[in-house]
Length: 266
Image 1 (spheres, rainbow, N blue to C red):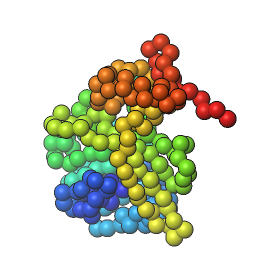
Image 2 (cartoon, rainbow, N blue to C red):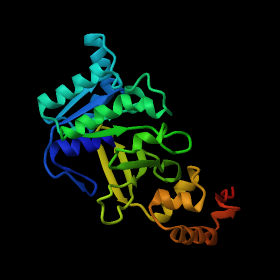
Image 3 (cartoon, helix red, strand yellow):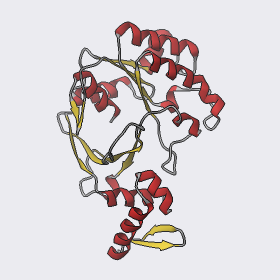
Image 4 (cartoon, rainbow, N blue to C red):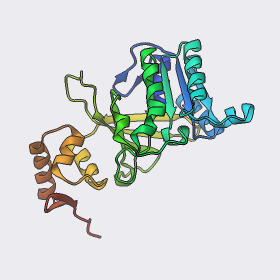
């Protein structure tokens, strides 16, 4: 998903209903993938163009002996300088767990090693996209301090296990923290990324039904009415209506304050 966003921004194109306003230069900092695999993904998405530049952790180490660590002031200065020199407007950091070493995940003070740098990039009009893996609960791992200065948070929920077509990657995207300037509800989308035998990637999408998002949240362990309302940015009354539909359909029950999925009969 992050690579598809980078491709759309650098080409001035479109990803689903999201249209880039213009072509911009993008620096993609990859702290996890082997370079050959990243290269094949770029080819599949047709993401290679003059506006998209990559900094890969393995290639950097092979050429310089240095380890990519954005918690380190030297690395921060080098990345900032590269963005400024190439006039990059977007910096993608993929991902926080592999790129930021030495930080204690649940301590707010530790996050300040990176937070001040991100604020400096914002002042330079460089937008930053951070990829961060969720924990077992489906929530973002680490201190909530990391969310304070973020304009947008998009959560991706895996949907492959309930799909008939198991090919590729299937997931929904939903905004768990939209910008305070957002005037209307932002829809959730269901995405399907499929790689064909020639290595080309096709992307399909559709609006995700709200009740499907409701069900997936319960599957991920978000089981109380107020929690679900907060995640979906809807009222508790709307959550109760979804719950009634699920109970009437036989796939949901309520135990105390929690909603519980009814196991399918074999």
